[in-house]
Image (cartoon, rainbow, N blue to C red):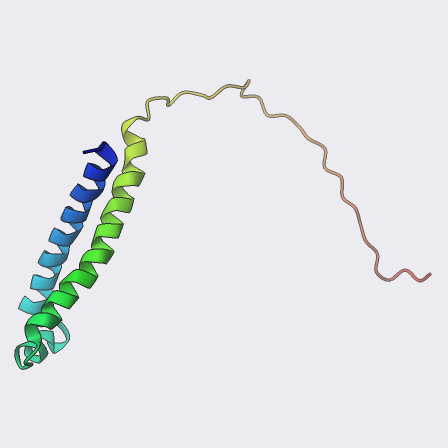
Amino acid sequence: MPKLIRFYIVNCIIGFTVSAVFTFAIMWFNVANLWHLISGSDIGIMAIIVFWVLNGIVFAGVQFGVAVMLMADQDDDDDGPRGGLGVPVRVPATVKTHRSDQRF
């Protein structure tokens, strides 16, 4: 299996695992009285699954994005200057004025 596909799958599994923990915590602490609503419903299992999957999509995307952004820090070994003399240079700036009160 290519490294990129393995990288994506591992990060999706991590995201869905975090989503499962998040869903469990939401139900355990009864946030917004969700546990009472779900346990009293005849389609409560489907509601929990939908809640977990939708949060899993979000958490997997965030996990993958963070993992990709952290990849650059692993190979960053050039902390020195990137060239140039390191001397400030004065650059003259010209300003064009526009006088709107002139009459033709």
